[in-house]
Length: 472
Image: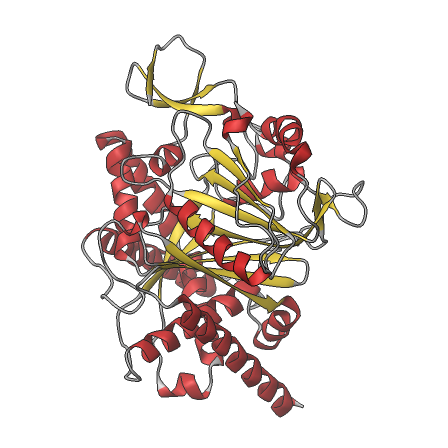
């Protein structure tokens, strides 16, 4: 990074942006769009220049260090040809051949760090047909620029509805949960709730500090514990679930869509661990870091609204980690896998209702003020290293999208540079939910883990069907 004089036109950088681009952490987001038609890259540069760059000044800025040692954003002239890549694969091969080439390309791309001498993003155009798409577009954007919510907002501003480009894309609104347990205004109900909130907050905060410093998960089939995992290749694997089936489970159990898919992932992960332990019960202590968006939002806002000084859903990185213990696989769970969803839902609901995530964020801010952003970034790195996996999700459009007259068949995203053996990302699009498993290559059997998660979902679906029959 370049040392800049204080009088230069520099923009302040948020603490989270500094954490994600430090000596301890260097994290990027890979967003993949699968097109229904072959890619025409002739209009790529004008589209990027006229549509993508104006979204936010961060796409035209580099990180620099001022005279006081503070990291800042500096706006620069963008050489677009340095950011757009069109790789060359062998010609006239089968889609199955290009499947393998593409997976290898994506795995290698996840290992490469973005150059610090230019704005922190790239676009890769794969013009070869795979089994899933006629063409593939990969956006690689540094996490310092923004989190998944910000980047999804940026992406949506570049896309149109495939059926009618003049209409805006529709995204599911996030409705507040309504507590239907009755009147809480009486002192007999209010006081216990306050004590419960205080107890859970203190318990979760202290537990989070312990897991972020002294206590680490057991080594297991999903956690190698090796140093430098973030520099190793990942084996990305994807699976698709029907939103209709998920909503059926949701309605029957009275939980959320996130509860359903998280419960299926937890159950599938435990099934995988048991299978890799040669059939014996695996009681390893495993923690998942579930990403929680801390914005007060109901749905995505326009970029214009997000960049306002006091926006309710501001641009940037606004999230926290929930430490969620993976429920153990016991005989009753295998007989009734619905219990796994209920256990996951209870744990997540309780942790969401405490204020520990805000205390943890305040603690990190205090560490930054006292010891600098590098030490604060090391705390976040240690939090991730000590856990077994990370789960993050985003809400996608309800209608089919199009980018420059290229209808989008499917989309998914992955995290690169995360110091864990296992990262799982979730995104909805039209009537499907896409789950991507980013597994440490050579350590986790990603195909077997995929089949275990799919098996877990089917187990849950069958149990729900039996429960509906019993009610009828």
